Length: 275
Image (cartoon, rainbow, N blue to C red):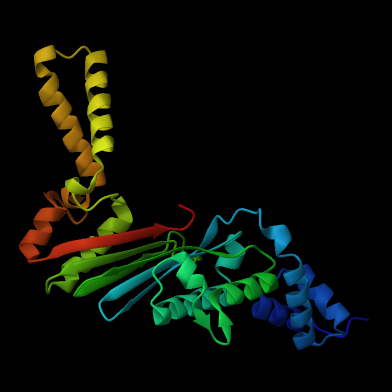
């Protein structure tokens, strides 16, 4: 007869994030000892790490940190939404973000090498992945710096942790408007800050497509230049932050809103889980 209760299974699941059957098996083997069962889950999981390497991590969460004029954004990925919302996975993401900031890491490679307790972030992720029984990876790390940095995290589902994260680096005093712009970026996903940042080859391709489309539509030859410019301008309005219509007032561009607020955005980051 099993020497544990349903409450013990629940406690082990909450502690480990492992599935119910795995927890029951571990408790059976440990004769009801939760700590021993936890260690058994960990050891079993470590043996399976290599087998999980080829799996897809399409779930996870985004964590943001702002400290001393620098904002850091990380994406910690896992396989299932069950693990993504587990307390120990969320705690791991927070611990990783803190370690990344403390080390001043600016990319995944330096973040994985950052100190975490007596080991590294990479070790902490491997260890927790063993307990969770899923592939876990630090997929993205990036930073922005300015006199002002605003962070916004968005939940796409009420029962999941943040799936979208934004950092806005800005100069100026109007923090409220800067935050509104961060929320706008989360919703409208611009690819560039200004038109000047768009690679020349991409703009040239857009012009080519716009002209070919206009010709296919039978537009007059004399009207083609104006039509092409109009469509390229439309492309900029879709992809460049300063050209986009502002989410809270579509009659104004984001650039105009910033100008009126005495703000200058110098950079931004937008992460979405799995993107």
